[in-house]
Length: 231
Image 1 (tube, rainbow, N blue to C red):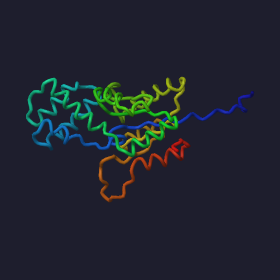
Image 2 (image 1 turned 90 degrees about the horizontal axis):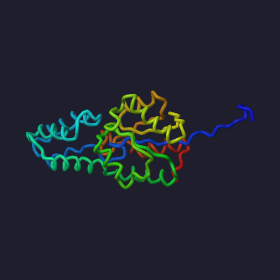
Image 3 (image 1 turned 60 degrees about the vertical axis):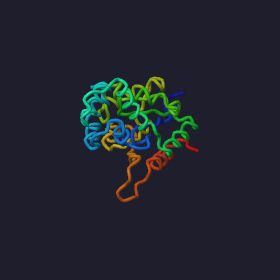
């Protein structure tokens, strides 16, 4: 058969989700952490997010991270057990799936759609998420703390594509990746590589005008348009 008469089968799309604010029910673990540490909740929240980047990129250990958060509320020293309790509280908060997101995962899994996670998160969270009951529906997770690279840096998207190339026999086509994230800068960085990326309004936040669509509605619309089975 001549090259002109060959027909290439379009690659099956892979659906990639961010985690916090997309699959998780919310994005504010401060109350759960504050219940353990006490002190000024605003100061704790400021420290928790200010130090998160270093934790999520693997620059500091969980002991260092939680130690810095604790010192923001005048807790100068944490035992190993207290560090574990704080990490467990953080993990439990984020591992609460949004019910509609869980339903979408179920529908995709039932139709044999390949799914993956791409998350800015610590190595500790990466370990926890792989133990979740629903994670068996996913092929793999790319976690920033494990890769020492975070969104929106180009490197972490390239790592995602490299992993997918192994999953698909050495071929990775960015346009065959449908990606959902709750931060516009992460969406823009993915699009710069040719990935079909879409903004997912963050779960757990009340829109100012009360009119915001749920990310699942946006995702179902996008996936249906791309021919991804959901029925």
